[in-house]
Length: 221
View (cartoon, one colour):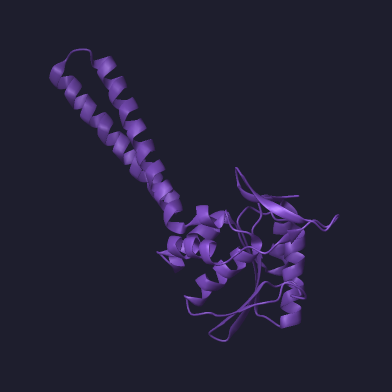
């Protein structure tokens, strides 16, 4: 809906500029083709700049840049803080034996199992399978998978069939801005105060170090 409104406003601005340029052409009656072309191009460029600025401001307010620098452990605690500040009772499950849920939320008599995925790649079907199992084990009313990326087609198909709510990066940003306008501070504070857990290589058992990439942090042995 917001994207649609932005497009409508942009079209209105361009139409106004075109109308204004036509009036100026009639008034001056010289070099009208060049004047009209420059005016239209200028209006389109100006509109694109405004749209880009709005998108950048939206991303900054959400704190998504800090979130993409988090490890999985930090992301779980960030979500716990976000939900807790919005009236949810939150339980962060243990890393081992969590039965498919990283967070357990409860509010207004409703229990929700949440699987948090701080991935740099699309989240696959396994995350959906895990949260379905968690819903059965913890006897929750709803199941969510919250991710910092998109979801694969198979994950979407299973989620739809099992009534699992998928929250991808764009939906996460919208949810953050709706729940907490000052979310950028929550994200930055979490990144500073919560230390990431050591991630060990499954093959050699060595501690993996955090590297910065184009789409956020990743681990390398």
